[in-house]
Length: 403
Image (spheres, rainbow, N blue to C red):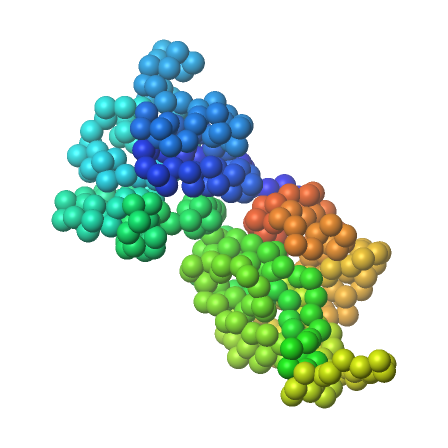
């Protein structure tokens, strides 16, 4: 299996203090297998250097309308051709005004005027500039012109004030770009995703948990959203920020996750069980902290409900996808689990080096066999997984209609 065709984005950077966030945005887009071409205004160079952006993007950075590296000095035409989107982050109040009035007095503004692809902007400015009636009129016009506006957010600003106008974080912009570019393979499908670890209390302060970071589950939720799905994310305890468009339900224990899944599973089309659910809980947890002593103590463990088996065993189950993290014999254990739970698809990986990391490698197991996905970022793997799910789900729906 291979990922979808590599998308190409032109990232424009204008002259605001939030330009420093463009470095992280570039890294996030590249990490998502997007080819990034950076174009900077002269003012942007006062805040961040082209060298930084070239190192992160792997491509030459352009700032000059008459750059001789572009054939026929037509940079304002050539650089945007073949791009899937243009993203301007940060977009200052001045640059927004240029877009509204069709001004083209530098390379970036000319590229935006001559584009043949979608344009997204992430405004960044002082709160008073954001609240100015001229800016409000300009933003309204951008909406009428079909330009996608991401943010801004409210918070601390470089000037020391607090309010609207702060550029949203790089992850939010990258998520919006990925959603725009992704094929809508699961358009309007309802998808339920579980993610993260569970925590089983032993006493008032201690408990049994595992090392799951939740990163893979959250990446799957983002990929499903980008594919056009309506996503409910049931998450164990993590420090991750959920995708803005997902409905998030926070739980702690495996039994809490089970109750949440039971409540929502009946109405979904696809269930993706990514969470590392604890197999056992303390049979009789103490209400108070167990005091330390020199004696050995024993904790009786009782089995937790098998959430995935429950959903797969419903009278009318959704399309169920399981995950298996193994320390050895991946193919044998993963395929045994898939067949025992009667799953159409299971994603397996070896835990060594994967827990908490930003990248991983997966093997997808289905009725046709094993499909290895080489090591890549978890966002890339999640998109590949969603593409495979969409293919199998679509085939299953066709069989039902012809039956």
